[in-house]
Length: 88
Image (cartoon, rainbow, N blue to C red; front, top):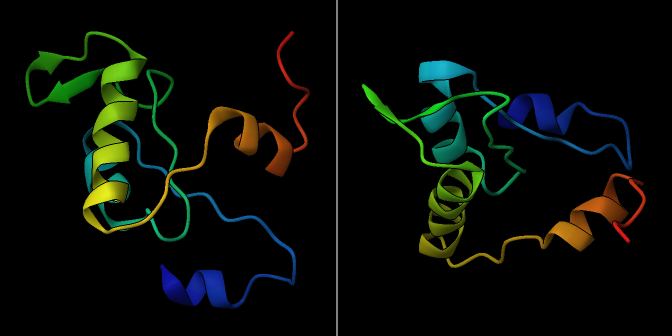
């Protein structure tokens, strides 16, 4: 993954995601570079256990970030980074 990040053009944004059973490993390995989670990618929290909502998936990803002593990006910061209009 780091090699792919290293060869990106300057000022590129990197985001890692996994779909279905690959989501948790990708989320675990990618907080330093950027991770994405949500029902769009995976509906399970654990094998055979449906996630209750997106918040449950986001909280787990945020915990990985905090365990690594990093700071998660807020939704407002993410919108700015990705040039998505702020919610009104």
